[in-house]
Length: 192
Ligand SMILES: [Cu+2]
Image (cartoon, rainbow, N blue to C red):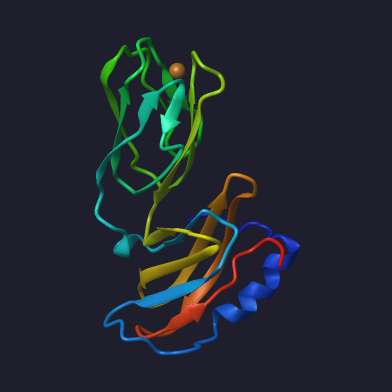
């Protein structure tokens, strides 16, 4: 479990809203949290309710990662296919899931497992400008769209909620989901 970090100034009022049940919805067995956000990815640490691991891919093309941001459930694997006519050598020094897969030429690339949750910064030894972010989520997750998010499938209980974007990094706070029919509005913005 991560330690809850100090929250940015204007993040604090949001916490007060977290316990407010604004309306009941028709969800049968899990609550929904939604609201405005300037984060790109929102997830909660609820390992028992983490989505099943998947096999994903992060393509190397034109000296970049496609896509530059990807979210996978904890335990997933990611392949790094190389569509450039030259070598790449992808690695991460992120403490949760460090890896260094060595040099690989054009082709299917190599597969990396991500057994631990966290925010993983990915780089290339050869091309210093290459960067991607992989978020390994140990619970329900969602990506925002047009400054808003909807996180569904959140089980009843008290959880650490994580929000991430490139400018602000990772922010965390606790949320208390009081019932399976809860529909929580939670503002996750650094300034508003
Ligand atoms: Cu490279």
